Length: 406
Image (cartoon, rainbow, N blue to C red; front, side, top):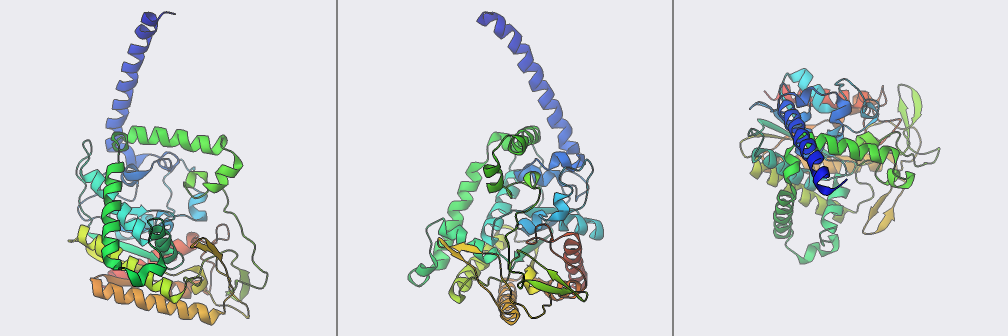
């Protein structure tokens, strides 16, 4: 086959392929949120936000509610894992429950593995990308924001995020942290803005490329690589890895029965007081950053406690999930009283930050503690994240406080 003959065949194929893609793109602009979750599960970036079915249309209305945070906002946990390949549109996360109960459009800006710094920067960047998109209508600003602070690892992840940018906790006395954070946020904001390509605007490209990538990971990647990327995408999640803990640790008393919590997280138990204060400064700057970008929104700081802070315990010690900080692996055993003291300290600090920065403080701790006395709210598969009862209780705690402030 000579080149002229090959070109004669390939030209009409490319033309019709382009026509098909453009047709699908137009349809998705109106029907993206109506797809089964099995397909939406493969979307990422801003297209994932528009595909969420916790709203009436693809583009949210002007009174929509935004919830921003980490994997707990995304919806990681057994409830999601059981529905990742659903051909329906199942509820599995807080934004679905808020949409159903409040009757509002809700968008979840959830970023697994990020602290408050990464979540705030990513949410702003994705929102601004859609606003300036050359093929999508301008997305409105949210009427109200729920910025979720997760006690279990947000402080640790904040430290990781600034360490990657050359800032160490030990340098805190030698630098003006606020000025340094201003430079870091400005640089990261520009970096994220420049990272969006033309294809990121296309729902068709996003879904097809995401589907191919995830199926490749699912069926062809080596098991070692698969495990390393376990939490990169819920499509790749089967069962979470279990790290063994002592039979005499992490034993909760639930409805009169002793239940092993397994591998779960606590209230920054492995951080020093200095590291906690350092990371709280990053949290404060993240809150200020969001406020500057969404100045006309009603702002709420939602406090989500860790698993070890919620349950009642018989006579046992508690062991939080190990953490790697400054290249050092940390672990330890703690008395339940130490856990409650650390929980109270962080809650108090976050409450003070909220008051100082003009955020309404929504503390879900006491409500979740009551629920944790009678039912398991985490795992048992993936005990780091909430299960269905956990997400339902978390949503109920938020809804009751949102309604009470009106």
